[in-house]
Amino acid sequence: QVRLDESGGGLVRTGDPLRLSCKFSERTLNIGAMGWFRQTPEKDREFVAATSASGRSAMYADSVRGRFTISRDNAKNTLYLQMNNRTPEDTAVYYCAARAEVSMAPTPRDWKYEYWGQGTQVIVSS
Image (tube, rainbow, N blue to C red; front, side):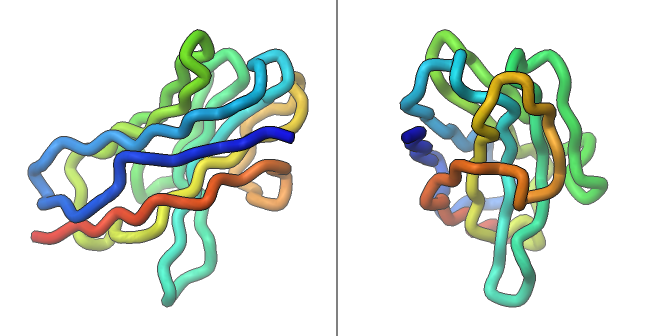
């Protein structure tokens, strides 16, 4: 069973630096693409960004492209989301997710991710 633990959220101002982390428990040979999703009480869970098993390719939602950067360090078993130029509209609970096999590609479709973390709350104040 893969365990994902997010951290790094909190109450931040738009100009403060913020990087979310997701530590995964399983050896990287057993984890494929990983992604970040977010959810608010008013909206369904939405895709933010995803990266391949190697970390060499990435995809982003239009709403965050150019502002957020996803990366992963497989030596540290950690996925990151660097969040720059945030706005209050980025306030949400952020979840990391992983696909079960290393051959599985990144995708914005949440139902294709088998493993999920508990989420970390990000509140952006102006």
